Image 1 (tube, rainbow, N blue to C red):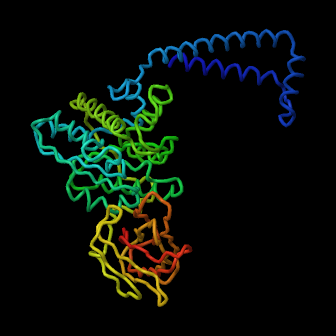
Image 2 (cartoon, one colour):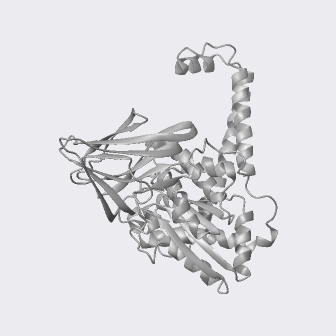
Image 3 (cartoon, rainbow, N blue to C red):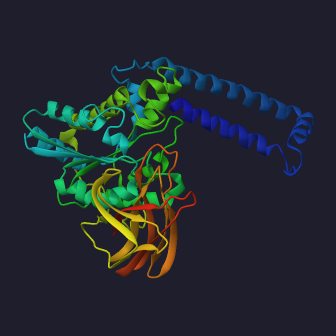
Length: 448
């Protein structure tokens, strides 16, 4: 590190020295031509200075090369399905974070008390490509139970495929916080998208704030996963986590680095472009285990104030959000063919199926909220469209046609946010889609 700082200082000195010798050359002129003329007209004194600077630069370059070479010599290759390397662990520690709440959880475990560990995320957390027993969430919880055999460790997995932070913040209270977790892992980095950056950043912020404010004072550890090409919301999510000094463990940085070094291939740890397979889930869990182990080793030295959530990182308008399914709210008016079904769709129970017809099909709801959204089904067959009105104003048109897609799932649309909470009407007017589809499936309203 000292060599790198010295190199930077020397380089800066060289730039300043050369700039001082350039007089008032017009920067709009051709740089290569001007550089050549200036070089030919330089007097002997400046030539000596330049030679000195060049020698210094070469020396600095040698030192930097030695430093880089030293780092490469220290690199330990990763063997698939083996132990983590020091470099993998180092790369994963994107944000070490405030550990006060986590230390409290570890002390409860050490004392043999009951601890509930919860997870919320998308299909990776759910266990896609690894299964219920070999997903990172189950592996991590099993490891915690093994480390503290006198404690009772409860496991809650609230992962649902194809869901991001917006749906997450509206379901976390019912599906996870109702179980009173002491420790919560959050993973939405490949489900949130840059197409909805501001909404998803606010959703992620609102989700962390909702979890943090729960009565059990849960500790939070955030997780960053990745697609094969590096696509991930790490840059956005880390801004929020950094704001609160919440720990963030980056599988993204760790796994892409060992792949870049040629230790393994992407296909070794994933069967597609997103989901870790069994070895991949094992690595995610190992990274979490490593972090927890280090905190436990230093637990007696961790004290002081918790993370400061007094000021939100965004508007955080979705805090305390909830979902209103057909068992929670009845439409005030319906027209056309509307059917309720007690069946699962996209990881959610209960749907309202609307079929477009010549006479028109619509539902109208009355809600009291500041923010209103809608969860609806994307269909690989016969997906229709819907015009959505709030207080008689058309706010969006939704297309549920997913023909040729990987499968049916629940999509979300944020409809409108008001300055204050109040009573509003939501009308969903179903019509035939561009490809002739007539079905529009309503999962729930999302309000906060």
